[in-house]
Length: 496
Ligand SMILES: Cc1cc2nc3c(=O)[nH]c(=O)nc-3n(C[C@H](O)[C@H](O)[C@H](O)COP(=O)(O)OP(=O)(O)OC[C@H]3O[C@@H](n4cnc5c(N)ncnc54)[C@H](O)[C@@H]3O)c2cc1C
Image (cartoon, rainbow, N blue to C red; front, side, top):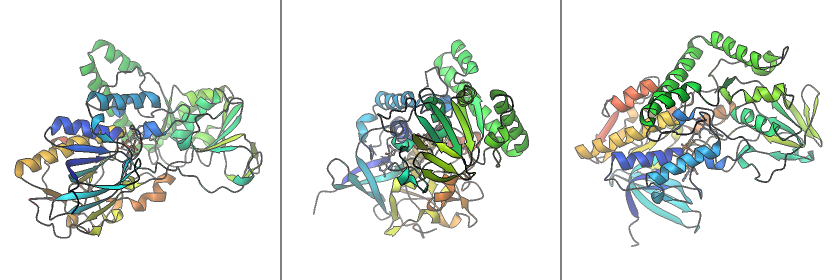
């Protein structure tokens, strides 16, 4: 018999914004628990370490993208990637979490045993090449939502003939020389609108080539109201005040978009028109066919995208790629677009649970057969939670509530001597919907590999922070849809 695998009370998978936040909460709220953070890469920070393209920044404000427990102290409200990475790593250092992170540890599989009330987890080590085994009482997935090894690239004709460079923002070459080059950025989402003003500073010209427009809204990079509040109040008070101001503004904007889409559409269009030259074809390039918040709304700090267009450094073409040519792109309209560099800002490949395969009592869990409970646990999967932030507000607002809730759950189990907690499979409503309700292509491509959501609380994902506070911070952890037990099997636990 070999040695028993190392055991921890809680195993956190992923050392990005979420994994580090989860560890900070666990240390503070459940000080007796042993834990480890397993990170597949060689560095922490996740998204904010991976993406290195020029101009990389947040497109939600840092007072809500920052953790509730760690004030964001910089002046900029929409911050650059390196500052966000530094903030995440400083948080890990200050809370002593970094000592618990094991790098190059990729979790590939986790098997729950009801008899033992623990997970057995298989971990591939990138440094030694071996697979090691650990066990834990609670598995906490903080693995983000997309594939790290490759972004999404549609199959375009003629790429082999193109004499220039094709770049994906997820793998930006550190030494890429784009001074004086003609660049085409394919895409219209957050990445495209972030890249373009930054590239335009040094390129000969940047063209944003989009199949269809997105909503683009200009916001001040430095929030003047936040700056005033921070001048007159001490940090500890100012941070939550600014946070709440931003939460309420964003919630109001989202709710208004849902209830009065025509009004919001007109409002956004007016804002765009005011920033662009007289006679600019706003309807072709900046008026989407869908309603605001059917897909994410892109925010641009100080309208930098519009400034680049006004100055003639950047332009927008709304058309389809027919084929790459040796010198650039030929479009469906017949137009030719010359290019030295083509950047494919065509999106991410979604990936649930960082590719981990879960199994419960010997049966593999098929995620699409599970239903999310309170947006963080899965029907039929014991002692497991996943951090998935909001799609209509800052990720961290929901992530912070998730950490808090998991800690409440763990304390509740300790107080009552429970070893197992399972969202009841039979209560997961039969009528389910996709987990993410955005209609963007990157969501639709992979949504079948994700869990589902139900029509009603607690199976419904409300994407509403004030409502989630009521449920996750103040609501009871016991309800009809969840079973706590001292370790006896839950009937049907491995299938919905
Ligand atoms: C370019 C870009 C800009 C964004 N801007 C914003 C924004 O402005 N506002 C906002 O709210 N959201 C934004 N997001 C969403 C963003 O991903 C979240 O805000 C946040 O960074 C997610 O943190 P996370 O730790 O949950 O996931 P990630 O940052 O993805 O980190 C996950 C970590 O888990 C590790 N991991 C994954 N699978 C495994 C495994 N099997 N084993 C071990 N380790 C694993 C990864 O290596 C990674 O380090 C943006 C996303 C992108 C791609």
